[in-house]
Length: 196
Image (cartoon, rainbow, N blue to C red; front, side):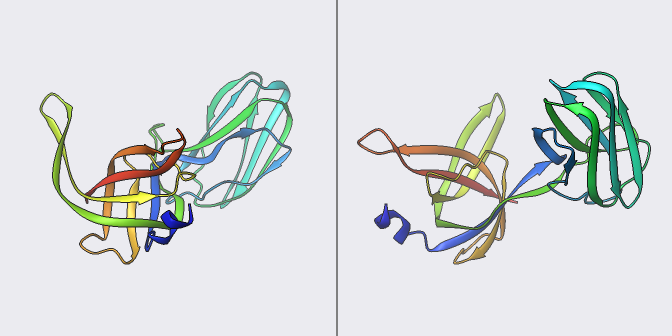
C-alpha cells in the first residue's frame, strides 16, 4: 500500500448535503449534536425501537425546548434554534434517536456536513466523459481522483480543493467505483467530478 499512498499528493475537503443535526445513534441520557444548524431552524426528533415510559427530550441551546414522547415516531418543535449545546433524555431507553433541521412548515433544511478534511488524493483532469443517467439526462465529468480504500465517498458529495489541485476549486462527485486488486481486495477507489 505504501506505493499507492506515495502518489496521493493532493488534498480535498469533502462535504455531504444533509439535514441531520444528530445522526441516527443509540439513545443515551445526555448527548451532544453532531453539527450545528446553519441558520435558524426547528427540530424534528425521531425515535425508533425505543422503550418509552414518560419520555422527555430536552434540547438546550439558543433556546430551550422539551419534546414529550409516548411512543416511537417523530415530533417537530415550535421554537427556532441557531445553536444546540446539549440534549437530555429521560424515560426513554434502548432504540435509536435522530434529529433533523426543518423549516416552520416541516420541510428539510439542508446544509453541508464535513465528511473528510484534507483527504489525500491523486487528482487529474480527464477529457469530458458522458455518462447516461436516465433518458435525456447526462453528467459531464471533467476531473477524476483516486483515494484510499478505507474512505467512503458517495455520488453528490461536494469537494473543495485544498492543495495541489489545478483547474477546479469546487465540484460534485458524479461517479464512484472501487478498483479491485488481483487478490480480490479493494486496492483504491476512483471518483469522477464535475465542476460546480
